[in-house]
Amino acid sequence: MRSVRGILKVIETWVAAPQTYFRINAWNKTFGREACTTPENLRVLLAPDFTAMAPDVLALTLVHESAHAAKGQSVIDRAARESPSFKVMLGALRLTNAYHYEAAARAYALFVRSHETARTLINQVELSKQLKDMMGNPEGISAAVGIASSPDPLAVLIQEAAQTALHARIQTEDMLMFLVNKARHNLSPGDDWRFCEPMLRAPHSRGSLVQPRDMDDADLFFRETGRLHQGLQHLSNGGLVTKAAGAPSISITDSHTVRYHVTVTDSDLATKVGAQPDLAARLRGLILKKALEKEHVTLVTFERLLGMWKMYLLARSQLGGYAVE
Ligand SMILES: [Zn+2]
Image 1 (cartoon, rainbow, N blue to C red):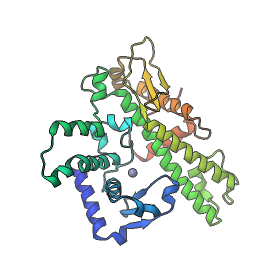
Image 2 (image 1 turned 90 degrees about the vertical axis):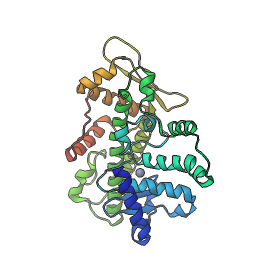
Image 3 (image 1 turned 180 degrees about the horizontal axis):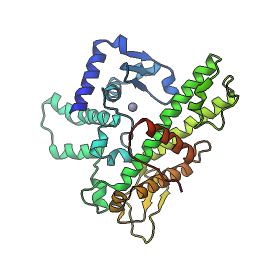
Image 4 (image 1 turned 180 degrees about the vertical axis):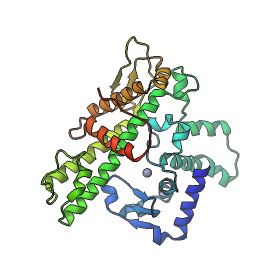
């Protein structure tokens, strides 16, 4: 409830003074975004073609954006609405995913509002079925693999790996904007090169102007992290856990319905992952490595992602380690 109150407060602020808070920004599209919000000053950046958006879609976008801006809640984009990761996301984590609020508002608009307007009764059975279809069910997959009332460990590990890729995407986006800014004004990046070093092949002409090759590398790195993040978001465990002797292994195969299909050969995975943090770290590493292999990326490597993730962990106390094999 606290998060919804925070969201409402942001929307009220926006409605009261739209001139102050809304800006048009052509860069959004370059980064594949319709809108972007900076929580520090509550500013919303919209793509120039936002007027072409249907009012309903724009409203849902603003619900999503207001979740990012709500004070002290660090709501980020963890998994896209309708993606398998979204549907198995656990309750507490859902509240930190902006798509959760967008989907909840969408469910209301689709299934409840029309009944309210027409003053007709809502079929509760139908409503809960529709909600399950849209919002998913964190316990559903666990039941399918026979781990009663505990979260599916593999789904959680996939989400954690996706979060690492998301963080890399955001950091890369910042790097690209930083370099564009320097290149446009013919400035040398100076000491700030350190910020780009984990991402670029090898920054050129240290101390002098930004070179075209640096920009090409930064652009490639950005596109590759975006692809990796998207791939991980659509990773589904498919509920296939089979018993096997020896250490658990992970394989990702193509499937018609989901981009990847993860199989772990270990029926006691839930208990083991809970009790052995090093095993969880190894599995996270395996998921990330397999996803990298699948995407055939050239500049983004496991080691670079790991470096970026470590830098991030220094700044925040967050769980989720990786093991290097
Ligand atoms: Zn977002």
